[in-house]
Structures are given as C-alpha cells and as structure tokens.
Image (tube, protein in one colour):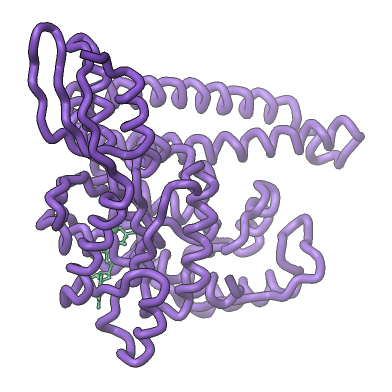
Length: 401
Ligand SMILES: Nc1nc2c(ncn2[C@@H]2O[C@H](COP(=O)(O)OP(=O)(O)OP(=O)(O)O)[C@@H](O)[C@H]2O)c(=O)[nH]1
Ligand SMILES: [Mg+2]
C-alpha cells in the first residue's frame, strides 16, 4: 500500500477514535535515524507544525522502538502513539463482550510486555558493551523497575488467559458453539468497513450494528441462514482486517476467529467503491493465510455495487459475486452461489451405525444435513447429505445388516 494511502487510512482510524487530524507529515527516508526514526530536520518541522496547530497527540504510521518513541515524545512535547497502539485503542473502545474485553486487554499487555522486553535488552546490551554513561547509571533502579513491570504484566496475562478459558467454558457459550457445530459454518471475512455486518443483516434478518467507521464489529455474531436448497448453515460475522494489523491482536483474537477456522466456506467481502480494493483484497488474503485458513474455499463478494458505475460491473462479475447490501442487488444470486457450493460438495449417504456412536451423528450434522434418523435395536439408520470426507467416514463406520 502506498505511503499516502496508508496515511489516509491512519487518519480515518484516528478519526474513528474521535481524534481531530490537524496535519500530516511524510518523509522519504534513505536511512532510519536510530534516535528518532525520522530525521532531525523533520522532527523540528513536526514540532513547529504541532505547536502552531495546537496538536496534543502525534500518531506514527510506522512502528517505533521504545527509545525512538521516548526521544520523539520529549522533543515534540506531545503524547505519541504508533499504528498498533491506535488500533489497540480502537479495539479497547469497541469491546463489548467479556470475551472481547479480555482479549483486548491481553493484546495491550502483550504489546506493553514486548516493549518492556525490548527496552530491557537494549539497556543490558548497552551496559554490557560499556554503553553511554547515562544508561549505565540508570541501570540499577531501571533494571528493578523493569523486572517488576514485566513480572506484573506476566501475572496479569496469566490471569486473563485463565479468565478467557473460563468464559469460553461457560455454559451458554458452549451451548451456542455446540449448536453451531451441527451446521456447516460460513464466515464473512474482509477488510474493515467493507460491509460484512450489512451483508449479515441483508442475508439473515440479524440486527447487527453497522457503522461507517473501522472495527465496528469485534465480537462474532452467528445466525442461522436457510439456503434456497433448504440446507441450513450458520453464518458468522467477524472482526475486520486492516493493512498492518498488529500481530498480537490476531493472536489475542484467535478465540473469536474460531468461527473462521471452523468454516466450510469463507465469504470474502470487498468494497468495490474503494480505490484501494485491490490492495485490501491482498491484505485480507495475507491475513487469512497467516491465521492458517488459506486453504478454506473462498467466494469473493464485491459489495457496495450501488456506489459504482454499472458498465464497469460486468467485468467484475466474472470473478466473484457483485452485490449491494444496501439496495439488495445480487443478494439472491449470492444465496444461490452459497447453495451451489454446498450442493456441489455434498452427497447422500444411507448408513446403519451403532446407536452408541453419537460421534457419527455429530459428524453428519457438522458436515451437512441429517435427513432422517431411525433408532432400532441399538442401531441407527441414518440418511444424510454430507461432504465427501464425512460420507466416507460414515461408510467406513457403517455395519452391514
Ligand atoms: N452504499 C453502500 N454502503 C454500504 C453497503 N454495505 C455497507 N455499507 C456501508 O458501509 C459502512 C460499513 O458497513 P459495515 O457493515 O459496518 O462494515 P463491516 O465490514 O461490518 O465493518 P467492521 O465491522 O467495522 O469491520 C456502513 O456505513 C454501511 O452502511 C452497500 O452495499 N452500499
Ligand atoms: Mg462489522
């Protein structure tokens, strides 16, 4: 993504947090200044601009080392954050469920911990090699404080991890997940603000919150969707992705992304009206690979067709489904495509299995649709429409009568 596009996106992210953007500065760097990242002249320019325009916060699009952040903060006389922190702040503000809140705090703590660790190794490296007097002098008390902070962060992280496990074990959540598992899962994924939640609403009558701002959705919503073929699937709305999404946020949201990992089909929602749609699609593909779901079949859903020129849409339809969540255009076609995906996949099996093998019934549920079940003398006669691998598993376990 080009620098100015990335910066424009950063400004939109900041605005989403209620920050008023009063100016932007870029620098083409041949070499990164280890002290302040940007060059000395730029620091002065930035300081002047900030003073003139009454800025109270500086947001850096690049990641800064703890030392660079500290130096810049001092020289600019401003609070300073980078893209990762900004995204973390947005997540913290948006988190609603206890699961979401715990996950965000874990990400924030991991971020802090990484910085504490880096700062620490930086200090010890400097002092080991003789270093500057200033750092060496600060080493004794600094060391203790850092150690204390790191230990605190570690303890709190362990506590949060335990809490998260407890929430995930909670009865309601487990019941929901169990119920979800008996249907194939379809997950809406995509760049933030592409219209995933709007599509969820258009497809299912869910009343998921939709907003023109990044990261409206943090917690997954799952609703049942009945397809034209009669097959019922679960449709999950999930957290959006973004260029340079902090890795530790992906880590922290692994639990939330479980719906994505369990999906049989991913609907990759892209915003046709964005000039950056190509870059955004690439970012999403990369993140999907990173979270280990690159191999799940994907259908590209090109949304916001109402905002673009009709003539141009013909070509777009060659690769993916063109829709508008707002005026409903293409939604029926999207439903049929999802139907077709599952229809192509499924085959009908009729098997007799021991009634004690509840796991087999679960497999059938998970991988498709159970058409009928009859219990007789400790046996179950089951007819199901399932994926090829499930069909094979059921046939292997079947008993001859
Ligand atoms: N014109 C138009 N606007 C749309 C369409 N779909 C969504 N929007 C608007 O785009 C904005 C974002 O929509 P959401 O559904 O919240 O997007 P999302 O992908 O769920 O975003 P996050 O949850 O924040 O990642 C909202 O202002 C929607 O009203 C569409 O088909 N056409
Ligand atoms: Mg959303």
